[in-house]
Length: 142
Image 1: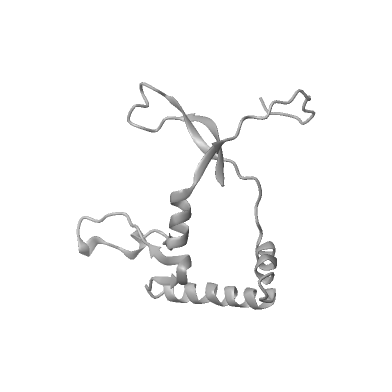
Image 2: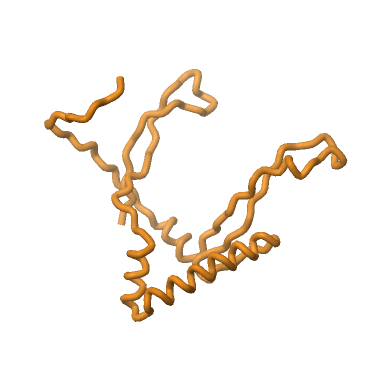
């Protein structure tokens, strides 16, 4: 399977932005969004009732939140690990540091072996722009 992408022109934020103000970058093309209910139905095809799967996932969500809040790293089987990432603005010394300088934590997910392998094996396929001859009737901003 290949990840589809398209090319978009964006402002260059690199060190060479004065020489090359714009560059072309890859952007993924998403074809669909798989919602939670669909995943539940796929899991239930393996003989596990969807209400039980949902119950387990709801409980895991609660437990991950509980353990993150006390500083634990939560290993979620082969799926991966969850942990908090914390950043702050700096202070000149320890006495001047205030907890209000700490930014809102981020939940960091580190994929397990199976997902790391999927990342490593990902291929890419350029999606060609669609050319249409139809006239668009929707209003556009200039």
